[in-house]
Amino acid sequence: MLLGVFIWFNGVGRELAFIPALLVIIYFLLVSVIDIEHRLIIHPLSMFGAALGFVIGFSLHGIESTLLGGITGFITMMILYLLGRIFVVWLARIRNRSLIEDALGFGDVILGGVLGLFLGFPGIFISIVLAILSAGVASLIYILVMLLRREYQSNLTIPYGPFLVLGAFILLFLRNYLRFFGG
Image (cartoon, rainbow, N blue to C red; front, side, top):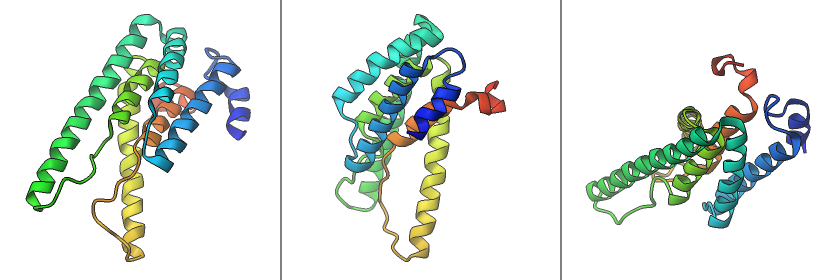
């Protein structure tokens, strides 16, 4: 509800009306909550996000930037997914253990493409960097808290979707407040 009030007064600059902005917020919240609770980014939600992202991206950036953003987001996240997979296989071999959970799920790859549609090109790159940085900070805090509580276990994972969503949220809704992004 607070986010609804926020976008009522702020929106996405003057480019996006209240109802489309509210749909984006609801989509972002659904993706985040489901990923946190179930470690999944479900395909029907991704398909809805792709349709919404295409419409929003087209209205904000035009067709070329929107499609290029979607392709770039998907390919970038696919590269990170494959690098994470290689790392996990390598780590399992070094430790003589069975394969542990993947570093990223394929739903995160699809989400990268969907968010690329929302943000266009080159906005998706900034969003992914923000996601990586925010996930790194959150992971560091989590590790420190677990160490202080003497409950640390290696190979614990965190859902990555909420951090991808956070990067996109910052670019869509907070860019006017951040001098770095030309606000």
